[in-house]
Length: 423
Length: 94
Image 1: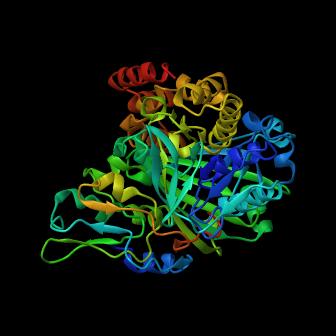
Image 2: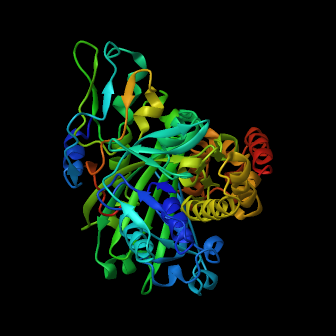
């Protein structure tokens, strides 16, 4: 069997299949696994610990996240909330910052140790069809036959398009993330973010950072660097009103007074970009067909619910369940869609499709443009007036609040709240 | 674009292996198609620009292989593929 793509879904499937007696070949177009992979990024481990026992104890993860920050960024001011607690400091730690080129390379080594063959620098160009069944792939001009193919070729999954399992996708259902990795001394990181030892900080920024368009900024502390970036909805970014220059958004973000001191003295070591599935349940393609399964970003498995933005654990879990489906199909010697359909059942019984289905209204609700400009400005202005001490008399607090939160505003908030109640 | 110089410098930090024949091409005759225009502002590597004739021009060096242009412009105007194996951007951090 063939796995296309040595990212988290592909490597997860390969890791799970190791020792099963199946002949597994992983194909990766990069120089090494992780060479083409980018995340924000942070991985949540709780949902996948049981699927990969003890794997993460020794994994090259960056910092465990103990500080969760969210900043409402208005044009000229910002309001910042931070949550921390012993539950985040105590083991097992629920989430870690991660650098994918390091992590994926390490995971690939574990997979190879288990006897799985991995071929890098190999782009897959076509699927082979035989009587309506996917019967392998064409890579580098060679036909590679297989009973079953798992497409783990990422968010722009040309393979699942070629297999007829999904269409190109709508700009509406995807966001673009761009990121810099900025090297910084670990001690300096700890001082600037109030961290101890290997504790880490995660911050999200909403508002002016995307000029009011769907998306936001993010900051994750790694061991000796900071991942700083911006995510913006592709359809939103295409529109005018106002027209935005995406690379320039990151430059403006970096120069904000809230950000500049955090990265001062740090040198950028890498600039990267990646697309993120944002459409949720309603934008999922077919997850399987005759002789083929689709996992990870390729299947559109990601979930942004505003406060938590997740994808990597869905990739690792869907890779695991794709492997289980292949093992079941092997028992019966039948790799048709009828047999491989157990993959979807496994996903439906697990957190993967339960989460994505439970939060299916989220993409529409959080795309509310008021969240990206109106509320950051409103709350910023309110704070400004509450904290202002003028030369003359200070206005009473309640009238100050009512000046911003008018009856019309309350009515609009109620309407927004009705959306939020769906999630 | 205000940050062209910064962007070139930033891309200079990344490891690229030459792709040879461009893996993304504007389809012949489509250079003035309005569907290409969003790529000028969206491409994270700033690889699309508009010349004085009103044509969109694509320079492939520095492509981060994100796929934004494929989604924003579409495959009717772009012949889009990944670079052949072992070429293109090689992220060291990711």
